[in-house]
Length: 272
Image 1 (cartoon, rainbow, N blue to C red):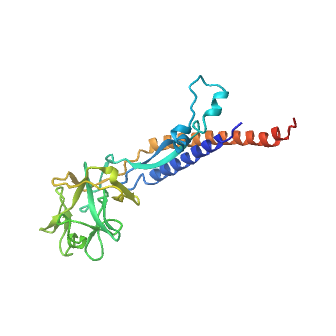
Image 2 (image 1 turned 90 degrees about the horizontal axis):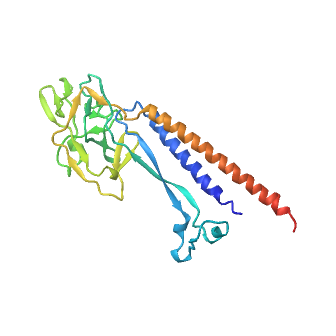
Image 3 (image 1 turned 90 degrees about the vertical axis):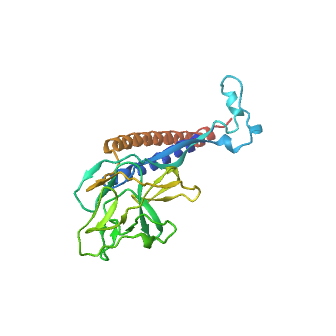
């Protein structure tokens, strides 16, 4: 009698643990500006895939106790936590009235300069740092439209400090009456090439080429910010479901452990 099924149950428990961690991170960022929820994906991994087709003797007769001896591991499967994907659905727009707050209503991302390079974000709650530069809440410089081949620092915004500053619905940045340029917005035609960095920044996966296009006519709302697209009720429901599935896999593991104990301590001690 085989007890290798315990590993299948264990893989299921580990997968649900990963899912719970992902849901917990979503809930923790329910109030994070521009946050996009993540969702865990799973697939079934069959041990039969490790074997050559000619050595797998799948029975062609109705299932019976005897027929299972010819499976050679073809009947065993595991849960494969294949990763997470980001849901880019629009978050709700919240009115703030801030002169430097701007929300994207539709597709697109702001370009910002970070120590690790140019990154993308949906968080438009901008501010001015001590050097008069337009930055994100994390202190990363916001970039204007321009020659993408140029160094990022050549596309930053620095205010004089002598006039009222604001951002228009068109994305144009003003220092008093002076037009400083237009915020750089880009759209990624293959979002699967994007990789989340932190809570609301995005870079690109090393194994995929992003298809980037400039957003010439952005749909922006000045005086608004985009909230998280996390639905707290949905997340809590999925959390409860994942916890129940985890408890079920724990019971399965306990059952296999009990079977193992009997095989070793009871059946193994029976003398013929």
